[in-house]
Amino acid sequence: MSLPKLTLEDFLGLDFDVASFGHREHVYAAWLALSRFGDREGAERYAQTLRSLTVKLGVPDKYHETITRFYLMLIGERLRQHRDEPWRDFEARNADLFDKALLSRYYSRARIQSTEAHRHFLLPDRIAAAA
Image 1: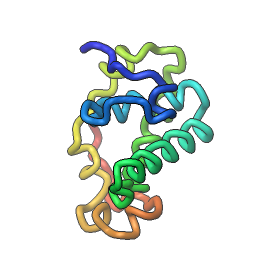
Image 2 (image 1 turned 90 degrees about the vertical axis):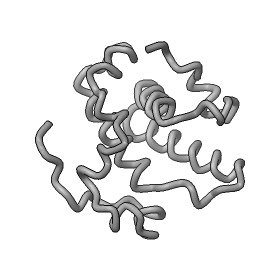
Image 3 (image 1 turned 180 degrees about the vertical axis):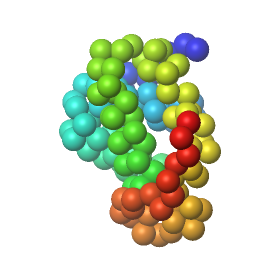
Image 4 (image 1 turned 90 degrees about the horizontal axis):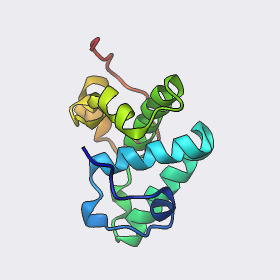
């Protein structure tokens, strides 16, 4: 696969084509932010940018705190294991991050769809099966 056509600066500045910003690009932007700024600052910048994007698009309720933070934690943990790994290697080694069923291994539908999960990070209520 080719690299997403997105830079960290474009993402943080909301200067990119939203129509081509799918799940893969979300993961890539998170990888870029965490790689550059580290776990804490990278996660905050990424989450704030997503919140700003939903406001800019007129859909602020679309931002989901639990999903955002959960993916940031997974990406951050895996990135720490292979700090200097290029994106293509990270992407190939972490195919599960691109499978939307991943979330259902950790969260029940009721929990992830709750208002509380949208507004605040909730811990998973399921234990993921070993891969």
